[in-house]
Length: 230
Image (cartoon, rainbow, N blue to C red; front, side, top):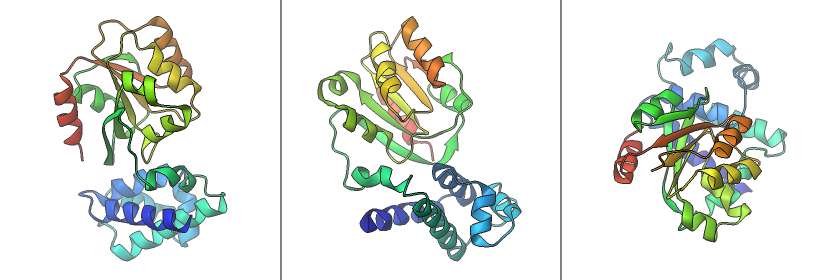
């Protein structure tokens, strides 16, 4: 666990410190760790308004020393909870080598649902108010043939608050069934290249409160646009 913690600390600190908007990156990781502003502030011995000011850019960007204290506090809180968040990354730290994954990225700041829809020139099938902090593009045929239930969780990268984008789908039912049986739920599922979505797929998305989008952009454009997001 110590190695996982060290590697994950490096990733979190690097993303916050080198982000164009450190406050938003800080807020993203606080939410990933499911820590409230008050809980974090109490751990740091400061007012919650200080955290709020940094995250909303009302204060000058936090320095390295403050970022280090925040990260230490987040990891300590997670340790007290039995490593609820950190334990998810045990396999991810070792690397992901799945042929079913076409592309994968974590964003430095959250993307709103409607921003994702606009970016992908998509059609909204099921609305959501959840944010997106990354994406994984999945070859559905290879996923069905090669992924087991354990592998499926690796598609989530560093956060389940992401868009899972499925290519080569015929109705959309299979991806939504896979999401349905998994404990982790993405913020959004994007079905690529569909003209009509299966009615069961829509009902599953609604039941799990997962946003559902259809896009017919060429896949190379989908990849280029998503890679361009900070």
